[in-house]
Image 1 (spheres, rainbow, N blue to C red):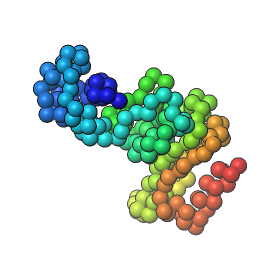
Image 2 (tube, rainbow, N blue to C red):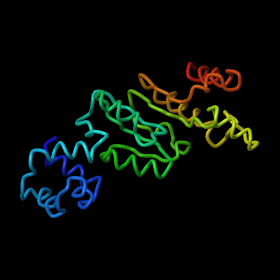
Image 3 (tube, rainbow, N blue to C red):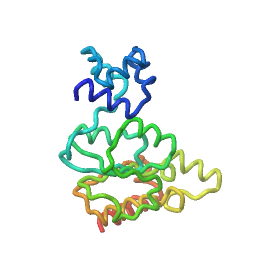
Length: 208
């Protein structure tokens, strides 16, 4: 992307005042760049990449492969896969603060679908994709999370109906869309939780 294109992209994510502050210029200067009335100095493009687009520029075109980003957080896993040539076509994240940051980090076109509550998404409404990424909630399985829930007398693992069963929403999407590959991220204790029965259930579901 050239400097003008980077400026346009920045203005889709930030206000002219925010862009100006990040680049150390007057907002009127940003406005003149936007209108193509003046040409940005050579260093501006690098400054935009470093200060306004820390997660990188969006991949152009169709990308080498299509992927979806479930339980996306602020988009850390997405960033890595975009750098490998992938194009994100679907995102799911429910936390409002994470969503705000995610949308500031990535500017997606009209063909990209963003959903908040994955439990309300019909699997057939998810776009076709090559790779599924999911960092499903770790609290019901982590050592700290289980300890806290036990101290409060609350269920954990799959018995936690709010977070513990979200893995099965990932599984139903995999079953319906059959991506070529998937990456599921959680915590170390997942393998030993409930004496290994939790991980055994996950493997059985994925294999079937």
